[in-house]
Amino acid sequence: MENKISIKEIVSLFLKLGFIGFGGPAAHIAMMQQEVVVKRKWMSEEHFLDLLGATNLIPGPNSTEMAIHIGYDKGGWKGLLAAGLCFILPAVFITGIFAFLYLQYGQLPEVQPFIYGIKPAIIAIIIGAVFPLAKKSVKSTFLAFTGIAVLVLALFNINEIFLMFGAGILAVIFFYFQHRKTNTLQSIAPFVMLQISSTNFFSEANIRLFWIFLKIGAILYGSGYVLFAFLDTELVEKGLLTQQQLMDAIAVGQFTPGPVFSSVTFIGYQINGISGAVLSTLAIFLPSFVFVALLNPLMKKMRQSKGLSAFLDAVNVASVAIIAAVCFAMGKETITDWRTIIIALISAFVIFKFKKINSAFIVLGGALLGYLLYQF
Image 1 (cartoon, one colour):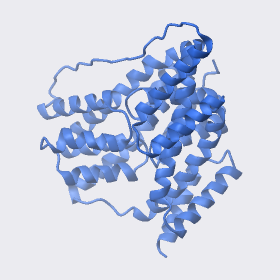
Image 2 (cartoon, helix red, strand yellow; image 1 turned 90 degrees about the vertical axis):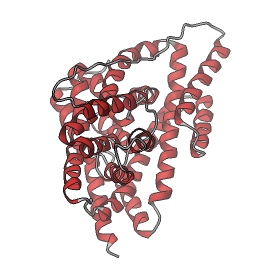
Image 3 (cartoon, rainbow, N blue to C red; image 1 turned 120 degrees about the horizontal axis):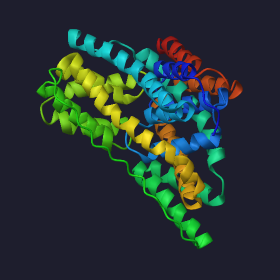
Image 4 (spheres, one colour; image 1 turned 30 degrees about the vertical axis):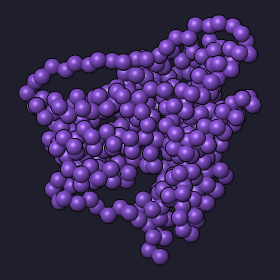
């Protein structure tokens, strides 16, 4: 086990990532890899990959769970809470401000010029992280072919959960055919039932919101876009939210930093004010803390089992392949003209030339270039 890190350092890192973490889970994980592995050397590339694989095996927001994993790994229970809360709260705070302004004025501020530049810079950040992760995850010819297969299937929009579990199960079968040994596979399926007592703070609307978002947080696999499909079913179709409010919540989730699940703060505020925002946010993120707390201590035992280690290796390479597929899809939508090509190339040059550069400078540089070039 690597050395523990002070809570102050964990708080400092994840507060920063919470404020500059634009671009969605793939970008957040790329930033964490740069900060935790390359710049600060808190852990090895291999261990980072193990945590990434574990994150992808459980429901909930991937980048938030990755932050919680890192915090727990480097600072125990205090680190778990510090990393998770510090990564989540900046996005919740910023989203809360937008929610207030939206309710007051009925529209969102104009941020398109800045987002125009941030998006191609984020693509460069993801590419910068995928290369070293890919080199470390491909440990054999079998894993190389597995990674290529997952990448191709991911580009055809095959469900990422099927791809990761499929890769893991295939690796276990391959391992046991090679070694012809039996080994006990322990299933990891932490499901937590939570109950809360009703007080004056919990109106009927708030209790309903809490259970809706707790359920979503406990069962949701996949990207933020899957979250919005759930929200359409649970809120819009049941008359709790209008279609326009949902679309505006999606917009807020896209142009604010941090986890896209912070859109739930916006939605809770529209439905029932501050109390609705607080309880909705608590409910959507709570399962992630519980799942990581249950899974993280088992990682070392999984590595000690050769069969489960083979499973983890395959899940890790599948996770990297899926991030690469996400990056490719984002690139097609984002890098569409000479301006975005210039921003992406400059960002990539800086990232590969100055490997320890702070991610904040890449994001801010992209925003500034976007604002300047957007005028042309």
